[in-house]
Length: 174
Image (cartoon, rainbow, N blue to C red; front, side, top):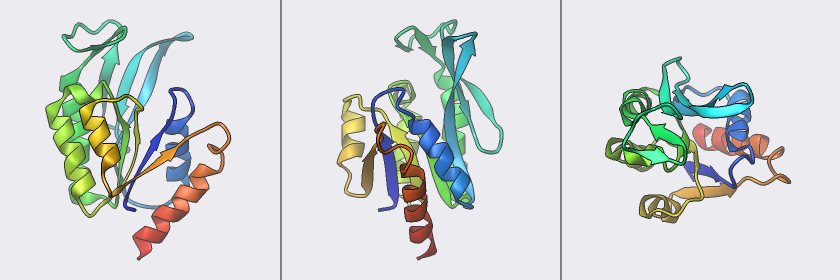
């Protein structure tokens, strides 16, 4: 299956699993990651980062925005400037598209939703994370026949990187 999406409860280590998978494969990677922003021990937001070094603030406690998730204001403009642009570039130039993550914050952007669907429909391999939240868009992605959902748990998260890297490399080779 060409589209592999990790899911699981928040804080279980889905992004860490993605990072370990990517460290085990040597494919031309595009797309984006999300990273926590912290002030001391307190999380104050999230950055969106591309493998080639572009980044922006996805959400922040100080962000004035009509779009909010909990205490965070969501910066849709940065999501589109960095995230959508990275997905579009990956569709044209990369072997593997990374989407970490497809969740509530990202779904405030219709342009982002369209980019996700373009990636999933393409011939390119997709590796990503998807929130467990139940929205019509997320449910439609989970129901796709070309999406393999992998539940990340405490008991499997250490073995998953090697297993999924093997699947990706096998499918990319033939």
